[in-house]
Length: 61
Length: 546
Image (cartoon, rainbow over the protein chains, first blue to last red):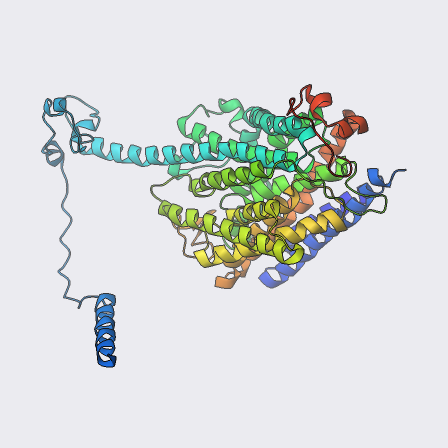
């Protein structure tokens, strides 16, 4: 899951970066970049954090 | 009585109006034609007699005169060229002095960070926390001197305020989407390679080095009280040598983020005046990566996942440290003009005032938020609110007006409280000092704030990042600037965070990031450092896991 989280986080950047090639409209670019940022945030706080929390010290008996 | 009051009111009003109005305009005389100054004029300037100063110069009128202008050729005497060269050197000297002194202030922020973090940790870890903050200065500087500076600034090109710095002229560039993308600099290794043994390069190095060290010291806060000292050293070296300089190059060193304006028409490119993104967000996302890897402290969460408060041991040094940091921020932000003379640098007054206003606003809203929510004005969160306001204004301080600065600070103060609760309780990410919330979350807020609030009134020589015009945000008419800022945020989250995570997972695999359970319970001072922070005091546990 850690690998998935990292890939998702990087994918968010790639989406934001590709907004530069997809359109010249600032509004459309902003929308795509925001989607990329959302993907990265889900990757970090959702997937990666959950993966690390599985082995958190307070869960251990 | 009424008549007297009416008379006074009428007189006051007329007086106010008369003071408030400009005098009647008179026809302006035509401007006199310019008069050429010759060498003869310069030679004719009266100099104080040689023996005049033997009696002393109590009012300073005899010190700093034509006698002090160096003469290039003694046979010719003083010429126009001598005078003009001296004017140029004076400008650069003012800017050197400004940049160095503000850099010294930023260096002193290390002391602020050290005692804020130590005060927010428990007494049993005081020595360890102080030593991390102390040694991050040395290990960061070593890494930056060896390679980091070259990666960051080796291709920056001209720095006009400091006399050019022409040796920093080699950027590694690739072509993507049909445009040039600067990735890293190549001159400046050990401050000698590529002709960088140069007075201007030295000034730039000192100023940028203390900024880099600020980013590194943020990380020690989130991993405090359980970070293995050896792992901290290696991790800090990697951050100072490679990861921080990479993003700093893209934003400040002539890299691709700075050129989003010239290449893609996005405002003036990614604009980060003093480093909400470059310094604080890089430090903040690195702090998050480390906090995930080392995990929460023993006793921070119950078996059911409920958060316990592990109270810091000295709120007095925490708030003293916040004051030191606020003082140092007057170096951080106004110093980022890299000069006080020329190229619109008189904005330094505005930058300094914006800085103090945002800090004030952040401290206030954090205090009131905690007071309303928990019934008391929490001291540590008030301090964090001040820092959050300062972090958030760091990117926009050179581009916004005082009202927007206060708005940015007000939002930062609430944001830091919400973020601390969110990370602590919802995500169960243990961050003993709130570094992720203060620097990561509010650093990103500061980057976005440029894209919203930049008012287009600042003018640093007529252009920014090579694009003619002034930085202007969405609310003042340029949506492209906001897009550039958001691409910067996406880069911080989608490139820098994973990079830090992967590097530190590798360090974890090789030497381990976290200390053993016994050492953590005993406190890290003896097992990690060999000496207690407070050897003559008996330490008592007052909270779970203490």
